[in-house]
Length: 366
Image (cartoon, rainbow, N blue to C red; front, side):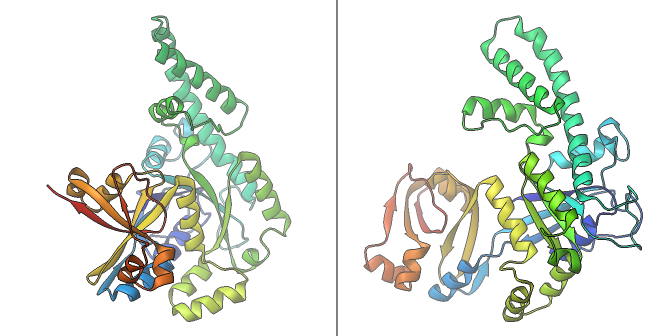
């Protein structure tokens, strides 16, 4: 499994329609708030053109792509942090995903009533982020109250956590998303304990119709959204559900021509997945042979034994070495054996840090 991406947004912004278009999950859609109550889940394949190339080289019987999970979470309303709408249930569902796609509506449609009575994606985004900030502030204040009592003991770790929590609370009180330095392991460990919603990897999914997709970044509404997103340090991915549905019914050749007509290189699904992978710092490695060619998702920085463990736990326990050829070298020489004969095969040990595009064979003994 790649990662779990949760769709978060106000009611009637098209989360479920977008969910269905991206993964054909069959989620219920209707023109009233809270049509989605229990989260809908869909599994989609992660597009990677390298898989087909490797499979053809090795004459693989089948191709197994990496997958990711989309979760359509019930609509958020103003006051959710205080229990309005689905309240705590909604916030709990967000905590169960790896990354969050904040869905905002960028299209007019008289048949679909917006919960605020008007279409303003920048305002919707501010409302969503405000509710998450308020929920985190309450969580932090509770932590600070408990930590304040424990800090009198003089424990250095508790004192550090108290100072960090205070800094985060101050940032949230100013209406800003916190962006702490996660390069420090001490900070990362403290943040993991806090489990703040506003620190989750997140981006904005601008839900467009055909017209607003083609004018995105040029019209006043989308420009305002982009400015709001920039202020909070968030990336925006415009997606049109109708286009995604049409792409799903086309052959690869026709899909490519369709995208060229739209003036884009990737589908909305590909852009959403690529954005999530980048936010989570994920990379892909491959195993290829006559039986199958398969893609595996890992976090950047993982060592060879950890990567082997993604294939099978026994491989990590009994790891001996990893034989590695880069994807680029395989393409250049045409096959594993040809690249090996050209001296491109590397024997890597337990300290090897895996790279995106590595094609590997694991030697192990249990």
